[in-house]
Amino acid sequence: MDDDAPRRTVLIKLDVPDQRRGDLHQTKDQFLYCANRTSEWAWRYDDYCTTSKSKTQDALYDDLRDETDLTANLVQKGIRRAIHAVTGGVEKLKKGKKTSQPAFNSWSVVYDKRSATFNADHATLSTPNGRVRAEYVLPPDSERQEAPFGRYYENNDWDASSATLQYDEQEDTFSLHVTLKNPDYAVDRTKRQEAESPDDHDKNGTVLGVDLNVTGAFAVTSTGTFIGSADSLNHKRDQYEQRRARLQQTGTRSAHLTINSIGSTFSSSQALSPRPHGATTGSE
Image 1 (tube, rainbow, N blue to C red):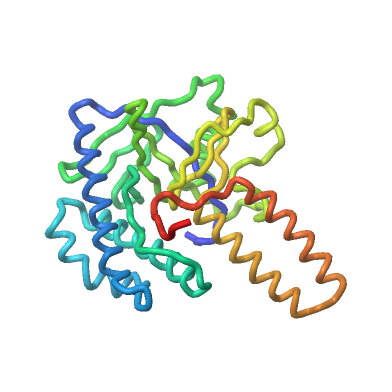
Image 2: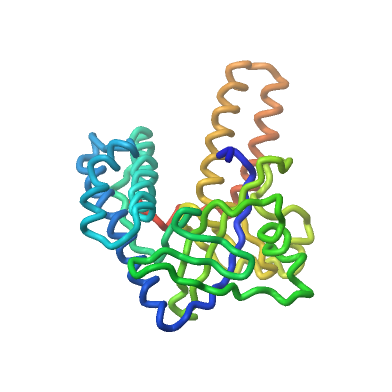
């Protein structure tokens, strides 16, 4: 599926059997171990960091399979998460900014359709002790159609491609941030990822929580709206910078007006953009 396809992220709370909760915690520990081992290997020296996913995987994959009980795909996801963060750190170094080796300690595990299945009312998640079946805690039928779950997850036009499993220690609950793609969906890419109508934010649109994970939705409001993802925002930022550079080279009055226009639109859409918590790539 096209990597540039529009995305939506839907939060789904999970009902995990008591006897399998430990398996998910064990998966998280080993997944973060893979990410941190990769970060240590890839960073090494500030002036020589490895950002090649294939080179890193060739060097570390077999060892990490031996050192953990994770399936092949989860090991690969841990490696890729680290290399993504290392690459971001290298970009900071190139710009003369202070940064340091990425470190991963927040509770999260990245799944895709090889390590998880996303079904109508439940998901199955790969762990060192076999698959865990977790039932979805769904909105009431009367509310489901208008909720993100009904609008996107239950919509056949949107395909669940990956998910980030997270754990809320205070509430002792697990949840999936499921990313869905729709290559045929027409979208204005200057808008925020999820909210499509003013009504999504006008009523009690208070931001209740922030998920700074690299791949998941990063903000949730009291209406259940999820705003953007770190990857999505970084991609938009890169697109904006490239377009602005081209317009500046043009030097016309029209180009100047266009720069001002897209700049204000971009700024408003990034107002809530934080630094991903999945990686600590600098000291501020």
